[in-house]
Length: 432
Image (cartoon, rainbow, N blue to C red; front, side, top):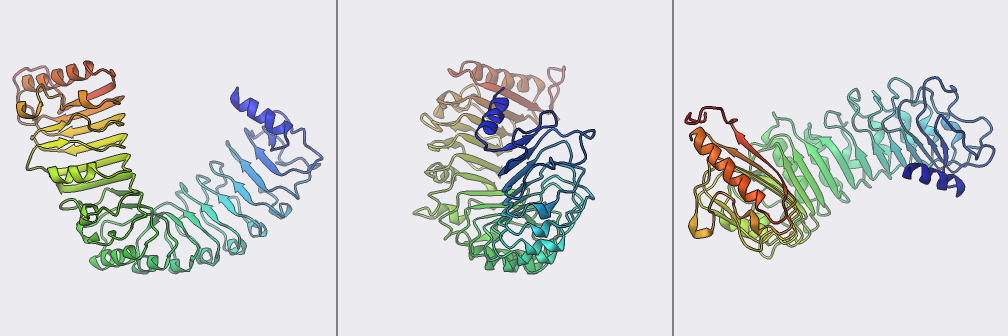
């Protein structure tokens, strides 16, 4: 209903001309500025546009699923700025002639099943955004891509090979998600002085030389705001002090990579250079109480996810004044307790721990509730407990006490408790 209303208002105000396969546009014969082709079926006319329509002034074209079977007459759109084909099947259909769109700023080719980008794309000298994600048959980019002097955003899949010459993209601000497969690519990253967002994937057989080259480049990317590293490092400690001076950093994610041995120094620095950091997703080997206190004081942190494999002391969680999404994964048996006043804005909490935490009367951790009652904004809780080495009866007790604590919470949050391995029907068997 809302979509129909918006479409109707758009037609009345001449904001957009819509062909939906059912109703022809009322704007035929008039100049069109924005064109949207929707819900087109295979049995509709083979010519995608009304021959009476003047498309010489079209500035934006958006074509939606299911498919586009005809090649657009690119030479007709002499002033086109935006072309969105994302989600439409192009496949082997040629993009020949796309070089005629001299004024194009945005090209959306995500999930179109294309297998190559034509070399003539180098003619698109005003192109600012190229989105070519989710195309499994696209194996590499042409070297001509580096002649796009105004390109600000390039998005591909991490299996796409980039040719040497990345440093020629002098205007680039966003790179997602490139593969750091060659020494040349990684070394040329440091030339991209305007880069604000980098999502990079490293293969699991990467060399130490490649790791060091990446760290050197990263230390020179002072405008970086969003950094996502995935793949494999032998240890994330190799980053060293490379991010210490990156005061604009807002999001840092390390995904399926090696761990930091402890909380990295660039986070511990005092005064903290990370006043803008809003998302932090990392893995550390050892997580200590002092680390949580430092993290809890980050003033803008909204999403926090940390995995740890070792713990030497009880963790009392306080602070995190702005955090709305809190995730703690730790396979150790020592207590974790949310303190009064902690996470006042947290709506979603996920916590995973090892064998059941002992009851800690000194810090209020009685009944394995972890102080969840202290989280005043809680809406959703996911708890996973790895109960290896205890009896089934003890595992049932842990599940029952956690369930009762969440039932008693004043917000009545949605919750899920996952006991691993799953509890069997035998009350006294040892959980394997």
